[in-house]
Length: 555
Image (cartoon, rainbow, N blue to C red; front, top):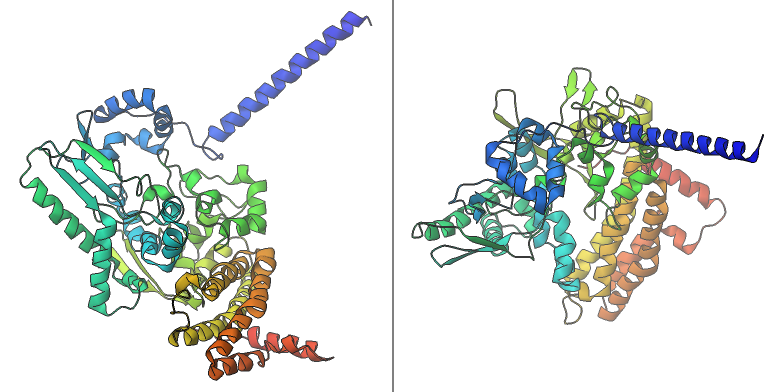
């Protein structure tokens, strides 16, 4: 065979290989764009008359928005720009944009026009009040200990901002609105009315909170609109509050929340919303590392390996029927599953299947207030007790696991939470209450987070204690122990207890010193003084009897 013949043969083989690679790439592109793949389905966009000009202009100025919308279910159904952004000219959020009255701030009330059940469920959920963190200790850290811009780009991007803006009116007047000022006033009134000691109690009166904010906004806007026939020209949204798609954003129409926190604009893709990374935007980091734990878990490993089998764009998406490759956050916490008497429906109350709350210093079993819309269109409200919530979560597990497996897991999980509570959280809380009641940390230079003990205790339960509990709840062993329990124990014994004893000595508080000595003499802590031969087996038996002997879970 001549050299030229060999060269021609190699060239032909190269072309064939390139063609094959191109064919594979095209097939992958088509698979990713087809229903049931990992991407969005391509759809035929139906452009309505009132949105045609928007599409024409934004195709040039912001084509990404148009492309996302054109591939959406909204576009297929003819839900255009003005369906979501269009408002009456006298709306408090309206401004004149190219001759059309629009709002940049699309709220749950707008989405509710087409999705009433989802809105009712979300409005009753804990997600809906995520913005209440702005009145909390966490916000104190973000806004003051670190500084305002940190809170704007950190805390508020997940929890939600309190919108503030001004509008220049055709009359020459300026209308200004600041929901932070308004909401603080309403929160204060609710706390006074019900004798509440902290803003946490306001969560039980969130409809009253929403109504109170809306009443003030409507009254202030009515004063302007009554004397100004031509209302809206230019809108200036305070950059400290916008852009923001935080879960619990305070909106000018009295609603709270942001649907596109999960349903990203402008595709609003189900497949995207069902991806674990969607939740991981906020549920990550040292204080609530759910996405990191999920990625480490068997569930997360299976999801990554079998992503193409997840059927994420399926309308029903019933685990065990439409897919079985792996569960995501949405699978366990809100999506459909089959049960003995039918189908458990989707719920936008994310806490409906969570029996333990792992957020506070001490975990407790919680009752969830839920609201939904039934087949007749009526709002149905009820309280769901921890036992029922646990059964709902276990119903998801049954799609892939045996009853024995599920019961065994929950025994292990309950034992870990009870261990954290009894060994570290309750004793630590008791010591901190004593110290605060005595006013030791209220002195100049020692108040709040100016005191090292407050920082230490906060991180012990808020960071390390949560990691310990979250790791146990989601099958992340390394987070349960090395990132969680180990860190809790290390800092409890080598930093927290020594600082408490230092305060006892500094203040001459014999009672506080006695509380520590009594604690360390108890069976769970006596290892500190060393263990004699044979005591290890005794300690193991103690833990088995206390936490695996069928303890009755505290309410």
